[in-house]
Image 1: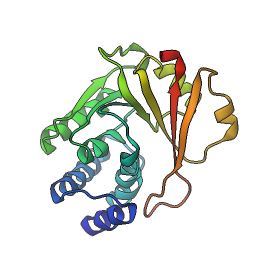
Image 2: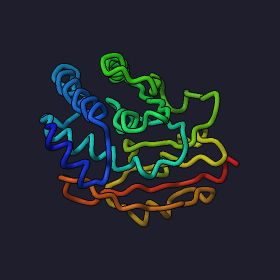
Image 3: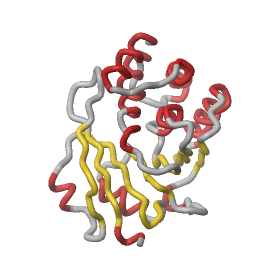
Image 4: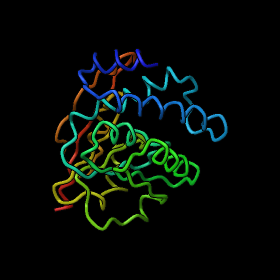
Amino acid sequence: MESQLQQGLAKAGLALSSQQQAQLLAYVRLLDKWNKAYNLTSVRRPEDMVVKHILDSLVVSPHLDGDHFIDVGTGPGLPGIPLAIANPDKHFTLLDSLGKRIRFIRQVLHELEIDNVTPVQSRVEDFIPDNGFDGVLSRAFASMNDMVSWCQHLPHAEGQFYALKGQVDQQELDALPAACSVTDIKALKVPGLEGARHLVILRAKSNE
């Protein structure tokens, strides 16, 4: 897995320290271990996790604008934990409603000594932050409309939504609320992963 990760990072143009790479691989091993009992992800092989979870999360990193982010519906910590490891100067809140996922994340934070992540067990509509976030991340929502509608209270006035998608459907874009504007759509290349991957960056004007 070590060489697989190194080659993937190089192809993606991402430079991480040996310590960061070691943390990412340790995260994969923990995810593989816990997955056998808690069914945290449908991806079973650690080698596939490197591509479908780690690299797929990290390609978002160069596009993050700000310092405080929330990963909504984070599951076992995706994309939040890989992004937190790659960006120790930024802070990530990882939100999920299932206790087993948050317990796993807490264990990861403890074992890997990650100090820029706050795990929160809550439904998104019940979580009211003290301050708005620079960015709201998710790859869990079925539609961008749902993401913006359910999470509109999370970013501050200049904050943005980062939606990780496969194909970007024009009908989905057309269904966005009138107060929501698309800032950018970036085609992402995930080394080792076939098929399209896109990052749609949105801003909800209603937050102003």
